[in-house]
Image 1 (spheres, rainbow, N blue to C red):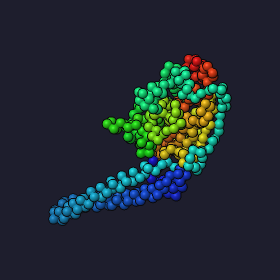
Image 2 (tube, rainbow, N blue to C red; image 1 turned 90 degrees about the horizontal axis):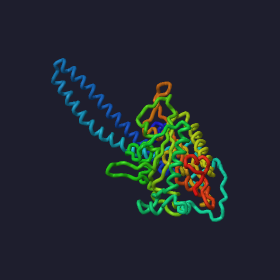
Image 3 (cartoon, one colour; image 1 turned 60 degrees about the vertical axis):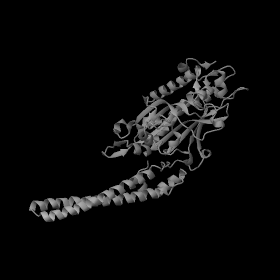
Image 4 (tube, rainbow, N blue to C red; image 1 turned 180 degrees about the horizontal axis):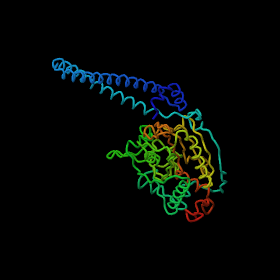
Length: 423
């Protein structure tokens, strides 16, 4: 959530940056300020009235002490009138504060200065590429055919048990999932991250804290009776660990990692881009989250990008890193890098990770703060990244490493999978 004081002091800048993010309702900035003006006016009226009540109440005590009961009774009537006027002011103040908050939470985060303008993914900027695209043998097939050939994944069984987008991993397919999850976690732990195994359901306050609500309400699975949301990513519970806390500056950065299944409705997704593992409703992912000093977050995000890049290099997959343009960024992000790996059998790039700096947008919602050397309370910055999402990694591992009679796995996975290949 944007800070109200910043909006008031930098109104023109806020509108300019929101335009870079292709936010249509720029006038909402003025609406927020108008509600804030009303709030301040009502708060002043309430404070002034209460001050008069306090002053007259003291006078009543003094009059009673002097025995001037008649004058004291007149003052009591005056206080009663003032008190009766307080409730309508309080009611109106509560209404305006609610309207102000409802408007404020619909404003997205401001993009960083380095974010390029643009409206569509076609306008994202490729920062760099790595790895060589494999030349597959004649007759090479996409991962959904490989999954059937080697009995790794059963999409039809998942459709029978639940529905499309909920595959069954079988035999060595299940083993490969476990191997990747453990490898990713060990890789993150070696970089100083603390592992958590968080709940897979969160309450409304938690979903609000990271910006899933109200922006992505329709994309999350919701249990009406308990009012819980299935998590779309481990970022949601992990970042909320420090909600409503003042952390020690000396403890920064706080580095967290965790594996969870993730659940997304993916409403509106259809066609060839959702076939096989390309887009699922339930999938496994290992996440990294950092809570950092505000002066360090842009240094930290580059370190997180390098961390994930090395992980992809160890999997021997061709990849590219994209800087997202304003129109392709998420609601809460100030800066996002996407990682894509190349699917040789499908002949296209598939996103496998997003690394984002949210600056104070999430931490303002969650009230995660620290005291600086001057004992001043400040908001920390939050960042997160996929390290990594499994479905498309598995798809590209199967496709890019296939031979006529096997799937040859990269050496980094051999000790985790227990074999150099799937035969």
